[in-house]
Amino acid sequence: MTFFRLLSRLPLSILYGISDILAFLLNYVIRYRRKVISDNLTQSFPEKSPAEIKQIIKAFYHNLSDLLVETIKLPSLSPDELKNRVRFTNAELVKACLQAGQAVIGMASHQSNWEWLPSAAVLNGMPADSIYKPLTSEFSEKMMQMIRSSFGAVPIPMNNLPRRMASHKNVPRIIALVADQVPNVPEQAYWTNFLHHDTPFYPGSERLARSRNLPVFYVELVRVRRGYYEATFFPVGKPPYSDLPVGTLLERYRDLLETTIRKYPSDWLWSHRRWKHWREKYPKIEAKLD
Image 1 (cartoon, rainbow, N blue to C red):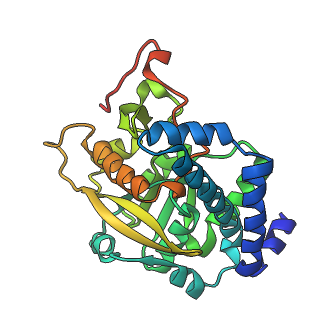
Image 2: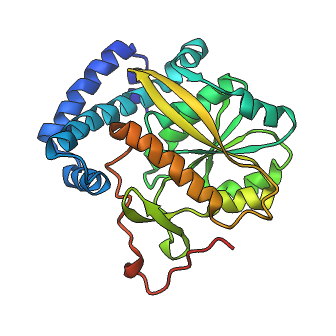
């Protein structure tokens, strides 16, 4: 832990130099998950040439390396620097809900630097619970807890979310979910087409919105230039949801996310095995939320 704290104190200019070296090693020497990345991109963008896919892969490794060093740097950034580096283009949409005493669901994704987003939201007057999958390594879990709690953001393990919702039911805040993760139980996932794949999504975000009558926003995070981002909120739905067909919120999220990925293809996390599940793999699929 001490090593990472010291590394965090290095200037970003030096950390980006380390990132450049790391990106080269990941791409050309280690070839980190190269087949997974290549297969994901080729199947998601059948219209792109091999040369275009190769360029996206190269840019992806740079994005991944920048994400790693920027995540390490987060606790050592000053509040003003982080606010300058993550700009919210329309925070008033969410602030209006919070000022009315209502919590909101923020559906984010593995796009650009999602690790800076909750802390930046807090600094911009939007308290945030950051919901995440616990890591298997105890050391990594403690380190990420430390990083993700920077500037008052509250990291909440996914299995603790029901308890958190019960104890903070009247607390206005963003409940931030990285909603493009692979479900642990595909049989109970919501299945839909996404980037030319039959894809399972966690149904929990829509269930939560409906059960608690919470408005939902998609958060698009775009890299403006190295180390600088713009976050934009897109309304996904607002209560009442009684007349809204089940699955609509997830379908809207999927459409918005796919649009973002197609605009900025190298910035999504192509190294994770997003499509390791398929319907035929399981004897019974419950593609419903209720």
